[in-house]
Amino acid sequence: MAGITDNYHGQNTVALMAQEATFGTDPGAGYVAMGILDGEISITRNNTLKRLHALGSRTAQQIVPTQYIVTGTITGIYQTGRLLTYAMGRDSRDGVTVPPTHYLNYRTIAASPVDVSLLPSFTLRMTRGNVVTADTIETYTGCRITSFRLSGTMDEPLRISCDFIGQTTSDSLTAAASVFAVDADTVQPPQFGSFQIPDATALGQVQNFELTINNNLAQLYAVGSRLLQQSPALKMELDLRSTIAFTDESAARIQAFLGDAVDPFTPQNTITAETATILYTNAGAAAALRSIRVNLSNVRIGEMAHVTRVGEVTFLDLTSQIQDFTQTGWGAVPSNAPIVLRDEAAAAYVTTTP
Image (cartoon, rainbow, N blue to C red; front, side, top):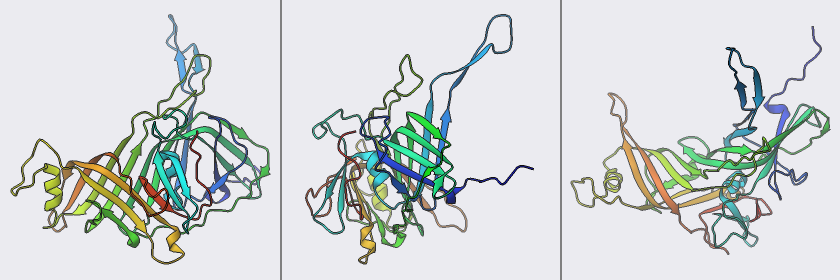
């Protein structure tokens, strides 16, 4: 029988991340522990093996590795705006207000000192085993957020989910110091959240919603290397899904979907564009550290569906496309941004350069 095995699990594994000054280069410092409350980190590494066949034989003559691909997904309860900031690209922290306020923006041509398509990259480090000295350390460099989802569900805290890609990896079996405090920040209880469409008009009986930010990262490889060379962000796509109770007050949703302003509503050639706001702002001094506001403009409902069953309440499932964010926020300088959040982070989550 083999000796005692140190099994790895969620309670003896710590996930750390730090922004890279140079794409694909481990900064070696500035790591922050990710709590990942009630969630998971899933990572897949692929050698992209290729079978080579030849005349005269049915079996492969050789198997060779081609592109080295790193993909992953992070899910959990929303605690800080760190991952959301990496998905957006820019963070202007206001040092005047208390608690500190972060103004998140996507990279624009006018505001970007370098290539607008390059989002900040980060190194992800997974340490496993003894909480004092890690048995193994996995390091994933050149990571960028491909898509980010912010979702709220009745009776649940605000949640996040994001997909990322990486450039390369490094695995160490050498014990190293791994003492990091787990992020035990407060979370967003559902009773302090609202989904507003149009802006400032809270929808009643919202069952769930999900906002998706898709950066559509290109994965560029080149002759002479198996590794990802660069991952520029192409077109940004914003989508919104929501489920609400179908009531006698749902006429406004049907009207916006059809683009008609006169009852009876019929499909028109122009669909109504609306503003929308996702707002979670806790009451109380301590809870005020956890506030987030997402401002959306030109929201158009693309699909409306419902199922009516005997003995059940009927709900409307709405799928919308969003043209852009709108620049609003809490009154501090800079006062306006697509996403405004408050937490105790003393510094901006990312710099404006990749």
